[in-house]
Image 1: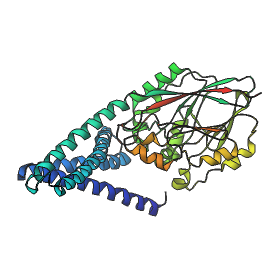
Image 2 (image 1 turned 180 degrees about the horizontal axis):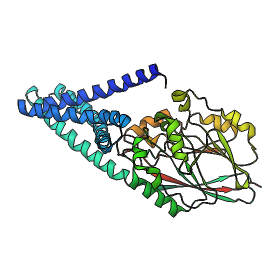
Image 3 (image 1 turned 120 degrees about the horizontal axis):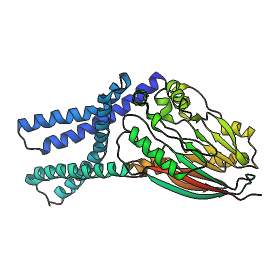
Image 4 (image 1 turned 180 degrees about the vertical axis):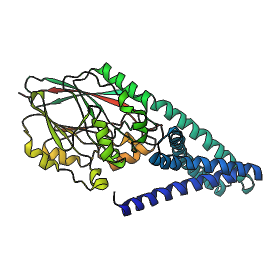
Amino acid sequence: MRNHQFLIFFTVVLTIYSLTNLYIFLKGYHAITTTKENRILYTVIFILSAATFIAGKILEARHSSVLSDILNIIGGFWLGFMLYGFLLLFISDIAGLILRITGIVSSQNILIYRKWAFIGTLVLSGSLIIGGFINALLPVVRKYEISISKSAGEVKNLRIAAVSDIHLGSIIRKRSMRKLSKILNELKPDIIFLLGDIVDGELGPVIRGDLLEYFTIPETTDGLYAITGNHEFIGGADKTIPYIESKGIRILKDEIVNLPGGIQLIGRLDRDATRFYSKERLSLEDLFKNIDKTRPVILLDHQPLHLGVSEKNGVDLQLSGHTHNGQMWPLNYITRRIYELSYGYLKKGNTQFIVSSGYGLWGPRIRSGSRSEILLINISFTGK
């Protein structure tokens, strides 16, 4: 990413982060008992908590350690509290204004209202965070049965296991990889696809624990293929991609692989390669110059954008991730506005699309608006 673009992005994010924290801080500051000791203690705890996420990311970039992992974990939960704390306090402010205008709450009782609104915010936010944390630990297998009306020779059925957005790093570590390996082994797929964002960002936490070493690839008839996501470039593709490939995982970078039965697999370079490395990816039209459209075409593209281009070019099935289906409620409503398909299944013309909510997480280890999942897709080829 160019320096001026990074500076603008960083400034915007830091401003939003600071203003949100300031809003929550002031609400709590004016709601607690008005003694100097209580307010000093509250201020110290709040500042330390709000600083953990930024401190963890800075320390991780300079020198990954157990301390940076701990700060990232705490900081992630703080991000969850920022989201729910802000929303609930904002709602309570609107409700308080209505109650004052209607005379239900007098000026003398508004301080009591603010105190209990803040306490209620802490309780509700904590409940949502705890519930989302438990939910994030329980991945599910999401099954799809689809058909493609093209011939794949002697191959009549293909059993695909697909995993997006693992986000290996400070949050997703050995235990998660062992669980993923166990699930994949039980599914017994013909082929496995990793749909990008295998690594969360900085490679330090991954290398320190050699986390991909705990990913046991099951025996398959057709192998395992991966594509890049935006996070492979955020953390430095010159290091991240070679590390992934050193574990026997083939990453397709605008490449076409011919599978048994003449099934054609296209793996696209993530679109953010341009933003971070000024590397343009090939257009789908260019890739299709070497495609036989009479045979099945499966496309792996991390970000589910411009679906009409895939339909126009004759893709039979596109698999994507990236969106996390919002990860935390109510962000899933926002992703539905941004993407034509932010989660699940869609058919446009003869092209079928599946977008996964992903296995891992970014930021908080919280899923309150979606589930962690592995896709199991059974394809029937019905053409002659």
